[in-house]
Length: 121
Length: 431
Image (cartoon, rainbow over all chains, first blue to last red; front, side):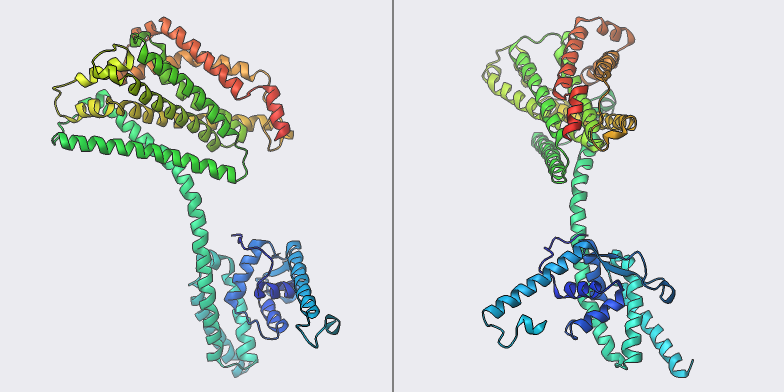
C-alpha cells in the first residue's frame, strides 16, 4: 500500500537505506550491516524494522527489486536484491541538499563553531 | 566440520525455528511477501553476531525481541489502516450492489403480496388499530430509509467515481434523462389531478408511466456502459435516471395532493388523484387482515402507493440499467475491436446505429406494451390478460399514443445523449 506521508524529509531509517543502496544493489542483510556501519552504530536496524521499511519504500517507489544479482554464482538464489529507483535517487539527492542547506545556514549563523563545509570536504 | 561448527549449526537452526514462530505474529500479507527474506537475514545476523562476534545469545535475543515488538506493532497498525481503506471501497461497492439487491427482494416481495399469489396466502392480521398504525409507520420509515440509503449509495458511488478520475459522463446522462422523465411525470400527475381521469385501458399516460422509467434506465445504462466500457457506470447512469425520476414523481404527487387537499376534505373534485383519494378515505368496513392492510393502509394510502410503486420501479430499473450497461459495454468492445486506433477512448459510433436503435425500439415496442399491460393487469386487477384482450389493446388508440410518446422519448434520448456519429467522434477527440 502506498503511504501518504510526504517523502521529504526522509526518516533516518529510510535515509540510511537509500545511502546504502546508493553504493549499489544489496540484499536485506547487507543493507542492515551497511546502515549500522554508515551511521556509526547509531541506527541499529533489526530484521523486522528493516523489512517494514523496505515494504514502505517499495510501495512509495523509492526502491525496487533488482532484476540482476551482483554475483549469482556465489549467492543464495533465494535472496532478493534491492536497488534505488529514479524517484529514490531524486529523494536521496534532495535530502542531501536539504542537509547541506541546513549545515550552511548553521555555519552562516555561527551555530557550529569550528566546523565548516570546506573542512568536511 | 568440527564440534564447535556442529554446535553452532544446531543453535542457529534452533534460533531460526524460534524466529519462524515470531514471524507468524506478523500480518499475513507482510509474512507472505517477506518471511523468507527475513528468516534468511535473521540467520545471517545470528551467524555474524553470535557465532562470529561472540555476542551473548541472551543479548542477541533481547535485541531481536525489542525489534520484533516495535515492527510488529507498526506492521499491524499499517495492516489495520489498509483494511480500513479497502473496507471503505468495499462499503461503497456494498452499498451500490447490496441496496439495489435489497430493493429487488423487497420489491418482489411487495409485488407478490399484491399479486394473486399474495392474495391466496393472506392471513388475518392480529392486533388492534394502534398496532396496525405502528406497523404502518414502521413500513413507512423503512421505505424512506431505503430511499435515503439508496440515494446515499449513489452519491458515494458518484463521489468515488469522480475522485478516481473517471469522466462523469454518466452523471450528466443520468441527470438529463432523469430530469426528462421528471418533467414528464410532473405533467402526467398534473393532468391526472386536475383533469377527468380516462379509463385505464385507454390512458396512455398510465402505461408510459410504467414503461418510460424502465426504458430510460435501460437506455441510460446502455449509453453509460458504451461510453465508459464499464457495466457499473451504465448501472450508475440508469439508477441515477431512475432515482431522479422517482424523486420528482414523489415530490410532484405530494404537491398535487397538497393542492387538492381542500377538495378532498370537502368531498368535491371528481378529478384524478383527488377522486382516488376521496374513494380511499371513504373505504370502510374492511376485514383487518394483512391483505386489506397492505392494500389500503400501505399500498394505497397517500404515501404508500407511490412509494411502493417507486420501489418496484427502481428495482426493475436497476435490472434494466444493468442489462443496458452490459449491452453497451459489450458493444463498445466490439466497436473497439473494429477500431483499434480508438485506444481507451470512446470508439466512433457507426453511422447507421442511431437509426437501427430507433427501428429496434419500434420492433420491440409491441412486446414492451404487452408486458406493460400484463403487469398492469396483475398489479391492479390481480389477473393475467388473455390473448384476445392483449390483441385488442394493440389496436386500441392508447397503443398509438403510447408508441408516439415512446418515440418522442427515444428521440430525446438520442439528442440528449448525443448518440450520433459526429458527436461520438468529438467525444473521441476530446477524451
